[in-house]
Amino acid sequence: MSADQQSEARPLIRGIGLGTATALNMIDMIGVGPFITMPLVVAAMGGPQALLGWIIGALLAICDGLVWAELGAAMPGSGGSYVYLREIYGPKRLGKLVSFLFIWQLSFSAPLSIASGAIGFAKYTAYLWPGLEFQYAAREWSLHIPLLGNLQLGWAIAGTTFLAIGIVLLALLLLYRRITQIGRISRYLWLAVMGTIGWIIFAGLTHFNHARAFSFPSNAFSLSGNFWLGLGSAMLIATYDYWGAYNVCFLGDELKDPGRTIPRAVLLSILLVAGLYLLMNLSVLGVIDWHEVIGAAQSNNKLYVFSTFMQRIYGNWAANVITCLIMLTAFASVFSLVLGYSRVPYAAALDGNYFKIFSRVHPVYQFPHISLLALGGTALLFCFFRLADVISALVVIRILLQFLLQAIGLIVLRIRRPEMLRPFRMWLYPVPALLAIIGFAYIVTKRPDALKEIRYAAVVLLAGLILYFVRAWRNRDWPFGATVPSGSEVQAN
Image (tube, rainbow, N blue to C red):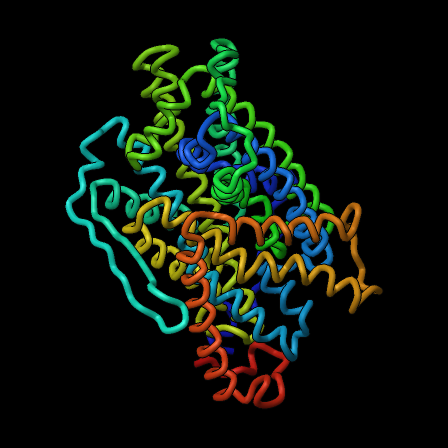
């Protein structure tokens, strides 16, 4: 047996229990997201009514979390959505294509997610060193695509860009080790995240100004076209901040008792994080006037509203301390994202439905090191893009090419395989799945300039279809020939 075959056959270590799984989910969900996107949500809604975006976003996250909980408990292997989509749509027919497209879009959406955390880290660091936000170069790029219109992309180079790249590299370095050691690191990071949020909530509630927090503009709740567009934009950002509760679904082969751990970790992390987000937002709006918060969002700089919040209450020392803690929280998110996503191409490669090189396991530390390095390397490139563009592209691509297919797929699986063992069943089925589908469709379509990100998703989809059919033709795979059941028997391109 060759060294490559030995590394592919070596099992992963089941070293993650419920506590560590929930901690990984929570640091993935929280990260820098709510700390840096809060001004964007307030600006989208035009005032304190932005709390609606967080509340409705939490309800959508619970509905989607129930989808993940049932699928994850029923199919608890490494790979998450790759495994679910393959089994739902048929592992030897359409499921081959759908699951390949999921891995293909993940090659873009996972690095986008990692880069967003790294960019957020750098943005907060600018509170301590304002010169980091100085922009050395920027450019807008546009390409006309027949039937789709103009594909627009902007990039910029600033001091924060180089810092974001350094953070991704540091995460890769720390993850280049055994999973049991990573479990200990995640618990320390979780403690730092919870301590940071706890201090913010305590400071805000003990200095809370009710009149300031609820000083709604006169048209705050008028159900006009602008209100619904603003709600769609706010929900897109809130959805980004709630995502991550499914992180443990990608680590099924490394979980203890995954049939019970996955549903509990998913739902527990959503409920805990939703409560924390609402308290954090109320805390800030009760101290800082919402007009000032919107001004920070419109400038795309000085998004470190929580640093300003602490400075108003306790002074510069507190602002500096909270900034450092938020930077640690942002790094924790990058750490968790790279860990979870790196296991997905690995699972697909073992199955023979992705490039064989991704199935390699490190001969000493026993983790999929090629997959880890590939996703981390792509994230380095996305650090050159603007934060708002990264978040929008990430959310729309993933909704269209993963989450909608998965929510619909759960219903399909219930119909096609009613006898399947399901340790956890969705509550009030099929209502949560239908609400998730409706909510995701609303986010994609009800926003200003919604076609911009839809075009990104369309290009990713088209490229993935071409790549799949070329590989399938060369390998005599579906729909051009018989499907080979074992990944080891497939000759990768």
